[in-house]
Length: 225
Image 1 (tube, rainbow, N blue to C red):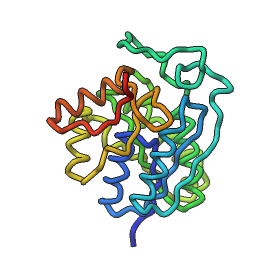
Image 2: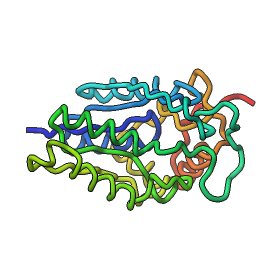
Image 3: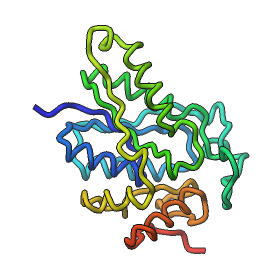
């Protein structure tokens, strides 16, 4: 019998690849997205469509309103999204975002009696975010296996990060092998209501370079300048 898994699904390039991989591995996928006060909801629309395309068991969108604390260009309208590369941790880092997302995923996994959680973090082309590193994932998995009723009763939670050591080009090539259609995905930090990308933010630059390096035509819809 297929095992259940919770998949964090942002609507972007990495998360659709992870979903496709989990499906291929035979998991019954329950997808989870967040309305966290980000600049646009185009990625949430994309995630909902992707969940439908992949016939997931259930798709949830949880509202957590991180805009109430701000501190990121993605959640605070007074902080501009940069259009040039930055040194160090960029202003698009959302404080504690992956910790919060994984905590919700862990809670839902307990309810579902699922012991596998998939997240598309990447430590190669990761924009300098500290919560995309293997050390963080290892620490969260240890927490999951200490702080839950299921773990105390003998179950074990696994946090799957199949993309963590891949470049963006390698992720795109993997997705191509899995038959992923990246046309529907939204990666841009400043996408418009139709999901069209700005082409200049850090996420867009990484995505463009990934398709170029992979030798695969970029299907991204860009805003007209």
